[in-house]
Length: 361
Image 1 (cartoon, rainbow, N blue to C red):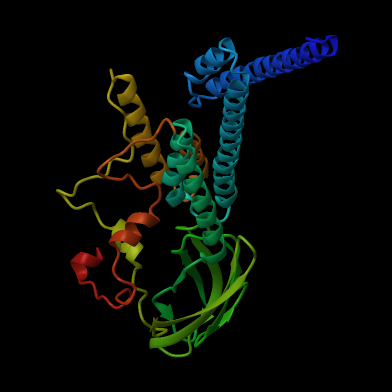
Image 2 (tube, rainbow, N blue to C red):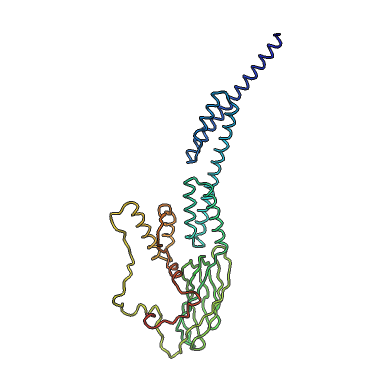
């Protein structure tokens, strides 16, 4: 073989050796990067392919550097994708919790809390696709509620007004809806009125009061029309609602009948009637799980009794929702409006039911 040919063979061998060295270095560096990413994934409780590193090591040992590089690059891409997916999901779930916290100033948020807890559990279990779906749908549902939920105001007009006289009266405005009222102003047609015909904020399930002077024109059942301008807390959007009522008016010489509340409290307590226990104390010597359950029940009962001034208690229940993730066959309401709404008469019957003496007491 000529010297020139020998030199070409040597040159080719050197190039091959240089390429092998390059592939070896690349495969080793990629293996190191993949190992670091997999450790990061494990630290974030993400699943990894435990056999992949062994397969890459076997390929490197046998000189199949190209195969080792390809598998390492695929593993790196997946590890980065999993970490990116985790970050995106954490952001979605946090955004869901944040928008609920922001919405609590304007609407009732209890109906969204189960989905919030579900999203957090799915994230903890690293079911990222499901967690993202629940979180994104939850965010949309809260946004939709903020845009579409409106206060539902029911006017409770004072009874037993005296005709042709100025009656200092309290008009009650009950917020039956799930949205907070920023303010309400009213116009009364059918009875002469004077005073400040407006009120401020009314929380869902709470009642606002307007104190006015009313001068009914005649005795008997007088038709009254009340036009309400209701301003929503979320965006100050105003909705006008008209409420038509019949008001009982007494003659000026007639005796004032006691109100339903006065009748209920002025008479002696009936014998045999069960007395409501306002306080409840958990039993002693409970296990850790039983103590959590007892605290959950006690806090909800405390919230019910404190309504409408129960915001701090509701915040406590919300902030401890993971500890209070309890399933039950019955529900302890956190406000008085819920059982009244669930068990009350249909709206078309309210105000049209006559109570006899016994039931009126």
